[in-house]
Amino acid sequence: MTSEILIRRYDKAFDLYDSNGNGYVEEADLKRLQGQFLAIFGESPTSARAAELAALWGDYWQGLLTMMDHAAMAGSAVKSGGRGMPGSPMTMPATTDCSPRL
Image 1 (tube, rainbow, N blue to C red):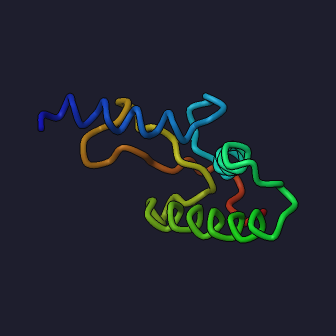
Image 2: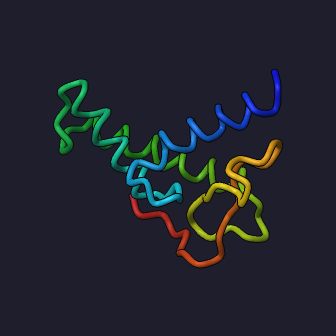
């Protein structure tokens, strides 16, 4: 697979997670995706299943943070300067709080 195809795939995946289109993947983006997921399956956001899902999405968010550069971990992922540099599609800005809020 050529690097251009990989870059497009990384960009597409990033854009799916960046639900508000601000160029960052933040915890709020995952919460929006979680809400959309619940709506698709007709699940009440206050149900026990929704609470279980929130816990799983929280674990997923923490996993994403763990995968990022620990030295710069700050609570959101941003596309690298070259829009998805091969081998490093996301980096962490040092300007936001990374405390869990689920």
